[in-house]
Image (cartoon, rainbow, N blue to C red; front, top):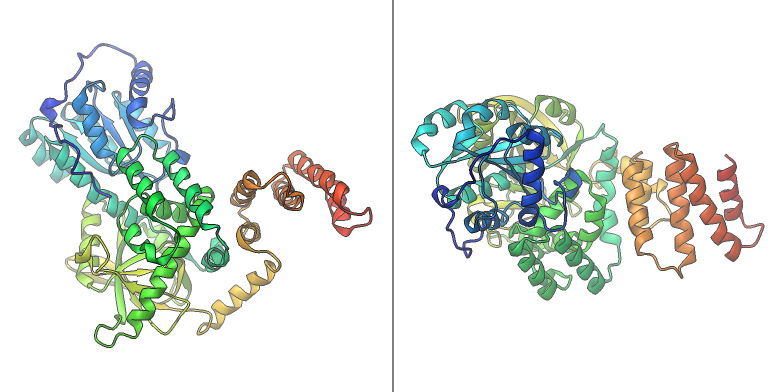
Length: 533
C-alpha cells in the first residue's frame, strides 16, 4: 500500500510555494481551504470527508497556514500521498483543523502533516488527541525542531524536508494502523454471535461471479475516485480477476491495495455495504487459505508451526472487557500473525513508543492443524513482506483464552495471552452457542441470513442496511422478494419504534400480497396483524 515510486518526486519543502498570509477569520480560512482543495482530495464531493466517506481506517490532514494548493509541486505531493492514504484534507487554520479531527471516533485515525511555523503551538495540544495517530513536521529548518519534537512528543515521526521521506513514513504508519485496528470480540458481547456465523454465511452464498466482480470494481472506483494509483489497480483487478483461487486472492490481499483496505475496514467496522460488495473476494481468500493449509498440513519437511505470535496494543479498558481467562474470543478480520516472536515484540515496542497510553499485548496462539474449520496458512512466499514470516488466519477465527499473565520482555511490561484454537468439533460450549443461533436462522439463506443474524443480535441499524442494499438490487418483477424485503424492513422499524415507517413498509407488503395471495393466506393475515399491533 506504499507510495508509488513511478511518480516524479519534485516535492521538497523548498519547492512548495506559499501564498502571502492575509488576515482572515477562522471560519473563512476553513471555507476557502476546502473550496480550493476539493479538486485535489476528492473530486466527487464539495465538502469535507465524514466518517462514512472513509474507505480506510485512517485519513491524512495537511496543516499549513500558507500552503498554495494551486502549485504543481503540491499537487504531485498529494498524488504521492494518495498512493497510501485515499482521503486527504487541507487546513490553514489550526483551530478548525483540531475541531474537525475531534468529530471522528477514537478508532478513526489521522496522520497529520504540519508546517514548522505551526508545530510548536499546535503539537502540545494535538499530541493528546486520541484520533491523531502520527505527526510529520514538514519544514526547511530540520535541525531547529528535530530534538524538541522527537524527544518530547512520541507521535512525531520526524522533521522532514522532502515529501518522499514523509511518504515512506506514512506508508509504515498505515500498515501499523491497520494491524492495530483489528477488532477483538469477547464472548460476553452480543456481536460475538455474529462473529461465529459470519464466515459460514459468506461461504454458502452462490455468487454470480461476472456480475459480482463488476459490482465490486464499480463500487471501488467510486470510493477511490481521483486516486490514480488505486484506480489503475482496480482496473487491473477487473481485467484479470475472475473469482477463483487460481487468481491468487492472497497475493491481491497482501499487495495492500484497495482489496486489503476495504476488507479490513469493512470487517472491523461492520460496514455492510462494503462487506456485501467484497463478499466474493472474501470467499476466495478463505478458499485460498484453505488450499494452502491442506497442502502445508501434510508437508513433513516444512510443517505448520505449533504456535504463532501476534503483537498488539490495547487500552486497559478494552483489554479487561474483551480478554477474560477461560472464555472464548474472536478476531473479526483476516488475522496476520508471525512464527517469529521477535517480530511481534518489535511491533509492540514501536507502538508503545508513539502511544504510551495503551498496554502491550503479546498473543501466543497455540494452533492445531487438524481443526479443519479453523484455517491458517504460511504465506511468506507470497507476501510482499516475507521478512515478517507471516501466518494468515481466515476471518472470524475463534480462540479460547487459556492464560493471561503480566510479564517483561525486551524492556517492556506486557500482557501475555495464551490462546488455543478451537472449533465446534472440540469445544462443547462453542458448539452449543452456534447451534442455538442457527436454529433462529432456519429457513434463510445468503444475505437474508446475515440480515436475520443482525436482527437476532439486536443490531437493527446494520440489519436495515442489509435489506436496503438487497432492495436496491431486486428486480421489479420479483414480487415475492420485494414483499419479503419490505416485510423485514417493517419488522426492523417496528422494533426501533419507528412505527409510521414500519406501517408504510407493511402497507407495501399487503399491496403486493393482495395481488398474489388468496384472502385466507396466513402470510397476509400476519401482515395485517403487525399493522394492527
